[in-house]
Length: 357
Image (cartoon, rainbow, N blue to C red):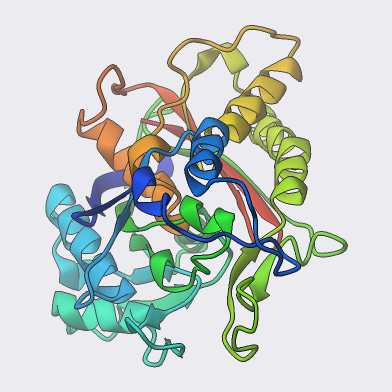
């Protein structure tokens, strides 16, 4: 039988480390522009306790989102041994295009996918390059789309990239800004003949909730009093996002597992969007509870949020690359393992993919 198989992965982790203590001198403001009088050091420590984030990565001024994506993409191509000229689809998930350092304008023309194709030196016009906007679940949706193209007979090889420079769209006076980071992850996917128990995508679930959930993550002006109303930053209604994720992500994950006919006990690892450690832990706990299981298997959920923060579309592919290449202590996957990818983000969107390694 034919399945979509991940043949190579890559990630680019920026070298500049922004630690929690670097925010200890920041003046934080609430959504009504009132100053938060609590000592910033206490605010930062409370943030760490809630999110699990100790540090995050920011890229340097000379790099843009497409540059990070290119770095991850070339590693994934090399890892898979693929001739770049044979790639049929180059899908790049992001949210803000190239945000040039110290400017307020997004540069998304030409598309980031076209820029990455250019930097990779791919000449083949049949390699179709396009961008995908789906919030934080964007990279995983790119994987789902590639799988659909393969099944339709339109393509046989796809490079799916997730890249973001969120450090350039944050309001530094907003406590939530400490969540976000920069980075890129990529995977080479191929439509390959496999055995019945061979590697590949087993199934997927995708949902968009755009009713009352629409503005849970949006763009808004700085919380700093008197700030320029024309300049917008990424904003998040933290409690609403938390409640949404706990309500919908466990169900989406279960739907994906069930449609594949997989026993929950056969899931070896869950690669979930790295947004908030406590939220992710609760999502996993709630998913297992849907199966009547109260004890979550130890080590089931690898984490990178403690040192990489939330790089949006880059979190899942980066985490998968790190585990796949034995870069997270105590975490590994082996041939035959059934794993689950899941993500949640602006839209509000959720998705999940079951995959056999």
